[in-house]
Image (tube, rainbow, N blue to C red; front, top):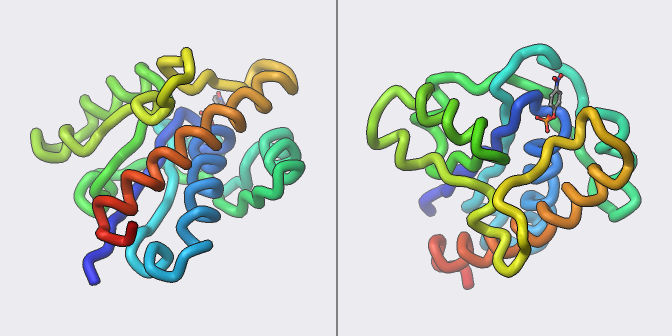
Length: 162
Ligand code: 4NP
């Protein structure tokens, strides 16, 4: 069975992208067919938090909604552009940087924006919650729950698991 690899990318890989990874994985793992063919991971542009668990605030807010984040931060590499089929940027600056980092034109085309999946929500990016308060983390949870649900349904169609 062909596997479909999805990588979420943010700046530090300790707030937004590990949350998106955990939410999508929860959806994917709930169904045997998708758990066998959809692989999810996350990475950051920076390496300041390399090897760390997600920000404790992000983990606490996620846990209240039943989402467990176990990812350890890592920086995106050239190999990721080869390995992953879809590389999902949390905001425009991450999107632009990924376009610059992509080794080939074909790999540039794998990069898309998370906001493309926010159907009906008035947000064109996932705002960085790192320097803000609790409401920022709750907003990220709202946006990524909706976005990952829509992304999951598109994956079902792509992988023929619908
Ligand atoms: P993230 O949030 O990109 O959603 O993981 C951030 C985490 C850390 C930093 C910036 C954003 N930082 O500057 O350390």
